[in-house]
Image (cartoon, rainbow, N blue to C red; front, side, top):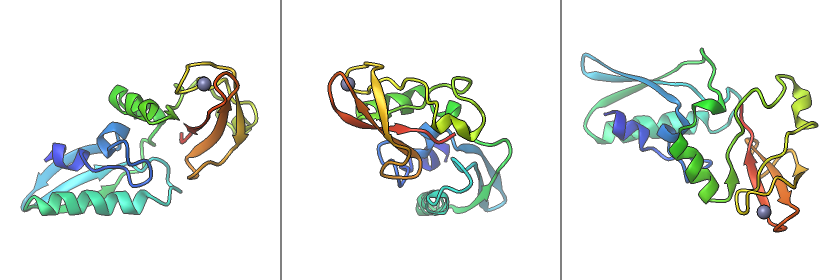
Length: 156
Ligand SMILES: [Zn+2]
């Protein structure tokens, strides 16, 4: 059951599954119902509802009655992304998030970003083009070494 729930791709990132993101916290059988605790990547993320529906649909399709519970505490952090998930992000040209502690806890982090290594050539000579990339969860960067633009997954 966990495998079914965790195999659901993230609707925004597609290349990673909800299992890779580490947002499936717990799965329990309660009578006929499969209860799934899901912690959204961040509470304002517009994809949260879509992810919950996708997980319910996937589990329902396996012949069970699924009920997703949104668990907000403890809050998800990018540290929960699995090593597998990070490797997949990088393979698709998205710089995986740096471990927390590298960034300040306040909003000024957007203006004093630590060097984000280029997912293509690993150069840290990169600069932020825009705080918002294709989705609110990503910032746009460009690598000064290979000149490739790339997305940095910045959700905390
Ligand atoms: Zn590069």
